[in-house]
Image (cartoon, rainbow, N blue to C red; front, top):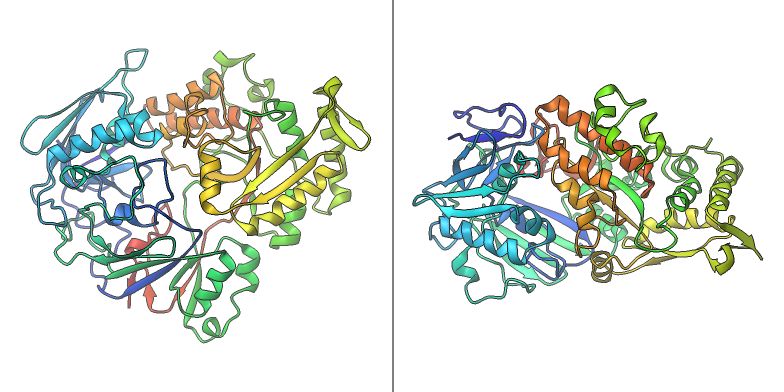
Length: 576
């Protein structure tokens, strides 16, 4: 039995550690932090596909068996569970609950609650829960406070080394509270929690307030010391980000992440910034950046043809857009693990080639000789893009497309090349419209449509789009979640994050193989091999990312000096 588990190697913190290195154990307590959120919400049930869940409900109200350390690639430490025991081959795992763990009504968190959660999420939870928990062959109590999960072997007889950690991240629900309630439905009645906060007030679609639990059972644990310092956390929802920014400058919001470099450079010259009531910082980190991109739905014509996907990507002039709109602040997403050691580089070495060789003939030949690099221009605008458009037209001609009467049509059918870009954020329209103008020069008609959050979520969940702007987020220890992003089984599973509908035996095998990595070096090799195949599949038109976290915040807020490798953790901040 152990207090912690690492995906590879040993956990950084021993059994006697008193606090995570990035937390301040003597941080002052009290005060309020107010956040702004763009969009809306209609549910406090984040475990099902239906509805749009309010931010913050997990993990502030609902806790997991174990919790992550954010200055390690992938290590878990006991939260609700005080110990973890794992088979040498990781064929089973046992969690022993802490005797002091309590629900907010004072009743103990029990092994029956854990088993109830497991069965409920396996049957009615989001696709990720159903996929992971479906690989458990037996779940049982092995003592008054212990639960054991046994796992299904892989086809080759080995066991997925990541599954014990995935089970450790299980949110634990109160079986008593859910008794007689319909789990598959959205709800605005806050489910019973065990975490450091409870819901104090909720106004559907507009705001939610969390209040610190005075007698929180876990406040003296090493994994919580220096965290959850403020008494009240409030989230207010705004129609768009421009209004949210105005609210921040007006003092109605205390903390803001800025994702727009143009606004970072020009929109923070307010009296509050000048007189010191608002501070700005760029905080470094070492995590993979989000893969933000126009995602091409391969379930639909014409994006079921890789050549077409390659061609429309050539028409996106990232360099000109970055220079003209964003003062060249962005870096191009050039990997499915950008800004990390997991990104493929140059010609594949022998270890990667050994993983790729079984798929020769199934993936583009370029996979075996080089890494995919997004097309670049000189940033001069239409003139600089012209060579890329000529190349795109050649690629489309090889795929059977011809120009007739100013329109690009497909062969004898004369089906016109036209598609819709589905957006949720009005600020993204300028990106889509610049792309649409370039595509129009090729005879391609593009409609840009921005819809409200509820409609957008419904269409994304059911894959009812041609192209959408969305993102994937990976950790420094990618594993089974990659199959939810890119796996064939997830391609037709409503609510999954396989937005492009990727269906590739090579991707399936390489993504599944991440969990088999023997050590860190092996994991990096496997991730880079997967990165190569995904890149040459042309499933997205990559956008950019900003190095470092740009944050602006009220002067009353403070944060620890040490920033973990995954970046700032607002849970460690406090009110001075």
